[in-house]
Figure (cartoon, rainbow, N blue to C red):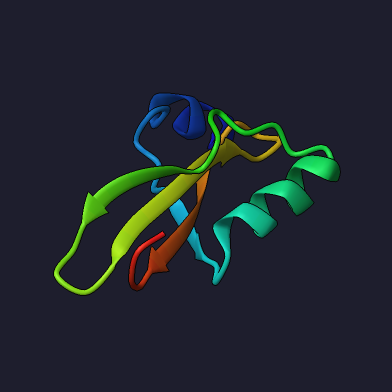
Length: 75
C-alpha cells in the first residue's frame, strides 16, 4: 500500500535547501565525498541585499536537494 502511494506521488516532492556560508567550500567538500551534483554552484538571483547562489544534487533515493548561499557584497 505504501509503495503504491509513493509511486503515484512521483515528481510531487519538496526540495530541501541547505543554507551554507560558503557554497564553493561546501560544494568541493561534498563532491570529494562522492556527492554527484547536477551542476556547479551558480547565480540564481540578485536580491536587494544579497546574491542568491545554489547547487543542486540528489540523495540516494533521487530526491532533489540543494545547497543555498546568500552572498552579501560583490563576489
